[in-house]
Every structure is written in structure tokens, then in C-alpha cells.
Length: 148
Image (cartoon, rainbow, N blue to C red; front, side):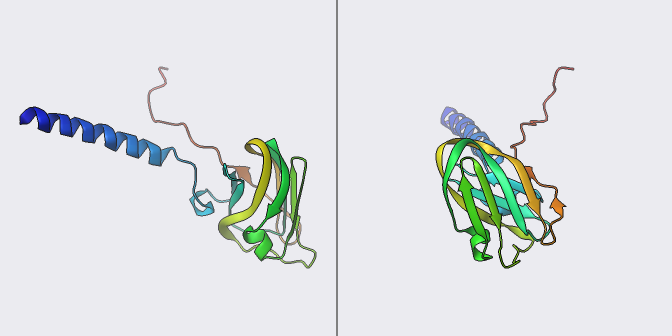
């Protein structure tokens, strides 16, 4: 009976490590999991955001794919016009509306190709001032010794 218990504990330990690893290294599932002033492109084409200030307009490039359409998200809810041409996406409002500070899905992209991320990110506040945004990159810092 003690061998069965040892095997069970060993299996439980391996399962716990696997579960913890998959949770720690998983891609974000919504924009509120991102650091402030960060964008992330999901494998399904959703662009998540987390912004400390209201957004008056945005532009970015999709790396590795072409954009064939845009829809939805908080940009659409704010009345933004969002267009994709080639690998470039541009969003703004003709009426001067803005996306409130916060987090969520900025827009959803229909993509052709395998996108690897976003680059050339330009985000502005409602008065046209640049906001310092970056692209979310999963941390590979495991806290281990680098041998140095």
C-alpha cells in the first residue's frame, strides 16, 4: 500500500508542477492581465490593451501577417474608425471621442498569415500627445542561476 501512496504523491507532484507552469507561462486571456500601457495580439487576432490614460488614436504594424479586416472591441464601442491595410492598423475618431483609460479588447483583426506580434506602436491621448506603449512579451525569467 505504501508503494501506491508514493506513486500517487509523485504523480500529484508532477501534475502540480505542470499545472503551475502552464498557468505561469500562459498568454494573457484579457487586457487586464497586462502591465499598464501594453498591447498584446492573441492567436485569434484580438488586440488586448491596458492603458493608464484615455486613448485618442492608435497605429501599429502586425508582424508576420496581413490584416484583411477589423471589427469590434472598445475602439468600435467608442465610435472609432479602424482600418487595416497590409500589415498596418490605424484607429481614430472623426468625432473626437476617446477610449477611456482601462483595459480590455482594443479591436479584433482578421489576419492572413501567422502573426508573431505587433511593432511600430503609436498611441496618442485625446489631445494628440504620445503615450508610451509597448508590446507584451512573456517573461522567461525563471529565477535560476545563470552560471555566472
